[in-house]
Amino acid sequence: MYQMANLYTQREIEILKLIADGKPNKGIARELGISPFTVRDHLTSIFKKAGVSTRFELGLLAVRGGVGNSDDEFRESMQKIL
Image 1 (cartoon, rainbow, N blue to C red):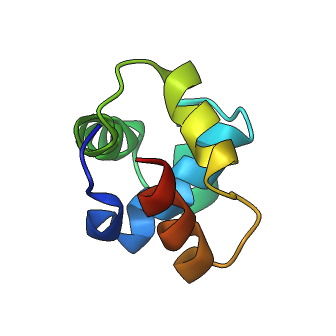
Image 2: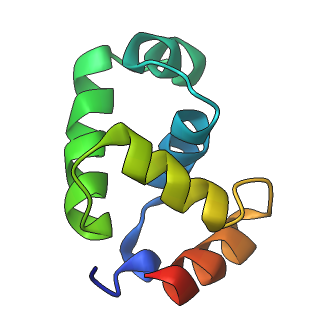
């Protein structure tokens, strides 16, 4: 996997946390006040950066990265596991 944890945007981190909570794209869109198509675009970017191809893998990475932590702590944890 790529060492790109520092490249996640604030919005991508928000989406990663919601993916780890098991939210579908429509639920994420509703919660963040964006369109489901925008969520899909963010997910495409996140998948590339994380080097994974499924929501399950992405959710697992997010949980292992410390989803409940502050955004800075989450970034640091993600960098350690990637």
